Length: 490
Ligand code: GLN
Image (tube, rainbow, N blue to C red):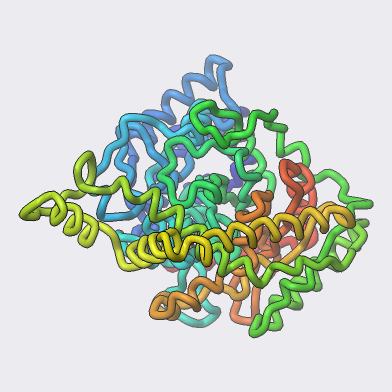
């Protein structure tokens, strides 16, 4: 059944509609692939019975002509999404065996369109990390390896399980979330496509909160078109999230394959950072050439506050996290540790329940929000955030979208950077800017480095202009003709 797992979402949906195979067959093939890939540690919970039940229901709807847009397609769900009656942990010990009584809006939208859930995907604890190494379930292993090598590499983070599962053909697509790069950087590290839409496109309701003003859901997929199909289902206004935008959701797939002739593409000079491998620079140049050939006009732009984005992000995100994570007190759900009095119970629960990185973020967040430091750190970071958004506004006067690398390196080895938080945070240097400004941005696989590892290019668009982003991503995908897959070793 391996041919069924190597299908794109688009071709699988066509096969289901033409009855070339059933959803039960398609789902069973993916269930088998998930079971055979446990060494990747991509799934933290497999739900095969549920998947096959959902698939049978999909087959019945296909037979009766009631198929939804994703009818019968098996997907993986990041464990940050609350799934009704199915454990959701955010890959933290503090949530213990939490079984939500409700469904997140994004997963409800997907399932409402007929998608099938294969299980819950591994991630960094509370989505804090860039390598999936902060997960309470242990790291995900990237299906890709250095050519001729056998070292275990990170799939990136925090959506490492989502990216690895898609890259290894364990699911046709996956949900993910992006607060500072967690969709795009893992997509770049695994040769997959990942889009973070405009802030407010997807409802955050039922997604475990990390930093509420930055968090957005989006898909990781095998192709740009698949990502567009998934995002069309995931997005939409939701009264249960006050920051959800009350706007129409276009058919994003209709933008893929559209001509990009005449579009002006900005190349921000500040995204050329020290120590970036020359291959990434070369790939960026290649991307510029591809878009030129496709009829785009290339303009150099300046985003002068870029260098402050990472420090601002690592103040704003922990500040919001420290507030959001205050709810985990051992009283209402999840882990509760013993203690002689209430304060001790709180302290012991939080000390045992949160991992080291999450504790670091809570401490930083509490510090930058504290009375004496609020103005010096948090308020200043908010001002920087505004300057960054204004940089983009100015760029849109001369261009329609921006092209940058997604990450400053290819996938690195597990264990290589987790001793040094700053080295880890530097992964997010090209991605946090669009979270701070709320803009849509996609990572498209564009080539391999000298070691045979995938590299991604990022396209950034105006707020709510995912359409242009998808058209350009489609053009890059076509020109790059990236068809490499990791050699199956798992
Ligand atoms: N790597 C970033 C962080 O650790 C971004 C994470 C994310 O986007 N969820 O905060």
